Image 1 (cartoon, one colour):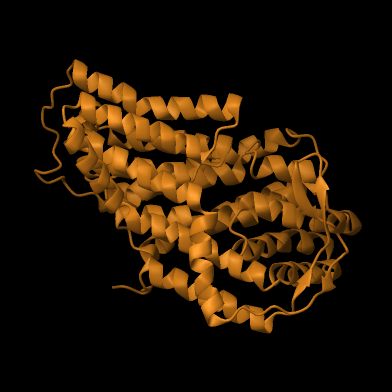
Image 2: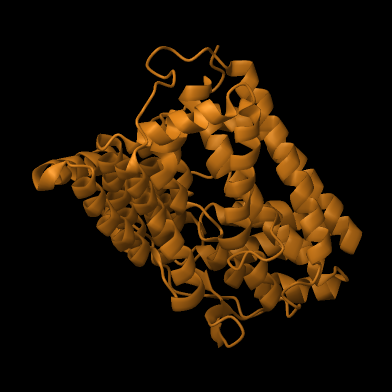
Length: 442
């Protein structure tokens, strides 16, 4: 029996846009002063400079205008989703996608849980190293087919991929977009506390894998005839196509590390690979174009969700409400006992992550305010950074403003409320793990 039923993700996100607009009529407008920070190369807030400014409430029409603006702000990610979605359909039409999945299912056979362990560790590593999120969207088709081959459901595919990546991102000792930037803003060495964070990361990933396997085996059904592996010729042509599939990922990693690549370069790499795959796969020019357009149509809904999710923070920023929310949440901490104030930083960061959907954006917003407060209360800066990682990182599990999560769930046809029921118990466990880490460094 369904205990919770939520509307379609699109309706949910549009409702959040309107709620954000309504809040700008209620929350007083205010701002912190900001300065350029040489250590991070970003603009950060200046502590103790909050002041009221002229109100700029966002009206209903302006809220809807923020939606196309959200598409513009998230343009790189939206283009990535469309171009990569097209490329995967070309791979599918060439027969390689099914051949890869059948090979994996045949390789793991009865030891299917090993596939969960290996894939979860791989995605957790991606989250730990580079805050993997949107990059998972292109892999949804192969993940779904793989899980169907083992008899697992769509939620298992989500847990293996985006779930494991969120765990890795949150607990990582060196994620440049979370721990890395927060440690810099706290004026701590990049790898300070790395032993503790690495220990927490290992425990967290192990717990998540156990939780995923538990769900996967409890809900497993014998795959039907459509999903049972069948012989697929993995000839030279298919091997060439497989290399073309892997090439954009390899190029992206090299490009990020050496040439400052971003989503546009990854999109271009997949675009080129998709065209070559169509030609090598004997689809012809017309067949390649048709397959590419079909693939882009199949991911349009996911791309739209990302743009709408981005518009929520734009509305609150237009109404000058985000700094007021930060100031209102932080002020009570100064009056709380030291240990209690430290633990309370986690829900403060979690609540702030709903309107501030970027983890790096939240770091430059909150850490310059919370670090001086931590010093005043006698709370170690390491504990303040862990509170940020817990609040911002774990909120990625459930906030509708996480566009990549919503897009992946929609692509997998996994209901949002079902995902919430799955992650809720583990969310409390992982939060408690962070609290233990904070108490160890206070």
